[in-house]
Each structure stands twice: as C-alpha cells, then as structure tokens.
Length: 242
Image (tube, rainbow, N blue to C red):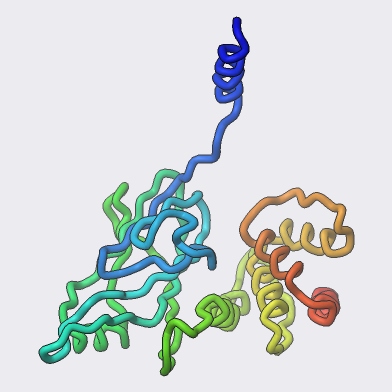
C-alpha cells in the first residue's frame, strides 16, 4: 500500500470512530422577520437571518420585524424593536414563527405596540408556549445601539428567579448595581439548578476544578465571571454567602 492510500485508509478509519455533533432543532422565521441573535451570539454563527439550526435545550432567540413598507407614496425600510424569545427545544423539533401579513408602516407601528405572532411546531402540529420580551423604543440611529448589552439588562431585570416556587432552588439575594458582568453572573446563577450552583461555587474557589455539569447556565456564568473585574468578583462572592 503506497503512502497516499495509507492516508486515505487512515482517514476513513478515523471518520468511522469520530462522531461530530449534530444540531437537533431548527427555528425559522418568515422573510419579513430576521433572527438577530441566538443566546446572544450572531445568528450567522448558527445559520442565517431566517433559519438557524441549534442543539436541543433552552435557548434565547432574538428576532425583529424587518421589511420595506409603503408610507404614503414612498417605500421605506421599517425595523421593529428586538423581541426576545425564550424557547425550549426538544430533539428533532422544527419551530416556525408565523405572523400576520403587514404591508404598510401604519400596520407595522400598530403591531409593534403589541406584537402578534405564534410559534408553530411543524413536527406535532401545535402552537408552542414561549416567553416574550421587547426592548424599549429609542430615538436615534439604530446601528449605533449596543443591542447585546440592552438585551442582557432586559433579561436580568425581568428574570423569573424571584417568582420560583416548589422544588426549584431558592434565588440568592439581589444587589442593585450598574455592573453588567455582576448582573449577568447573578442572573445565570439564579437560573441554575442546585448541582450547577455547587459546581459554580467550587469553580470560583479553585480554577483548576473540572465542573461535573455541562449546560448553558454554567457556561454563561463562567463567561461573565471571566469578563468581570476584581470588584465585581469580590461583590459576587459576598452575594453568594449571604
């Protein structure tokens, strides 16, 4: 067997043993909408502006209405404020956002005050339950806004952790602060179950520790901890023991 054939044979054998992660779910919007972010990452990382493939589990998807519309005798581009959707995806699910047809700016402005759409499960033929939040309207050029930071603040402020009941972990106390990193660490900690919280606390104390759990809550907590300054980390440690 020559060298070339050996490389081909080895490659085939290696591919037989290695399994690549497969995306388990799909989310799609009509052409009058765009997908801006998935878990605060650009939708382009997952697919494109209209359809993304993602892993099963809980995801935060940000969409907005985006279309050329008639206004008097002119045609103008209209963009709504970003809408934050919290969705639970099971394996092999395919969700589609369905919205009423809008052709004028007047219709778009009316709909923006109370967004009307449903999310449909193409697999089982039923509408999907979801949580919806919208950013507040701001004046000025939209391309100068830091949407990611605005979304982080919105979701941290409206976190359901203070209303948890039953067997869910009791939320830790909240400290009012303007530090985004601290707010997000508190948010993702409050979203975590007890096992994830325990791993997070051990990981803070020992940076060589290998967490036993793997989920978006821990990943985002670690992400914001690494971005935080010393003061925010110190405040967090006080917050955790109160």
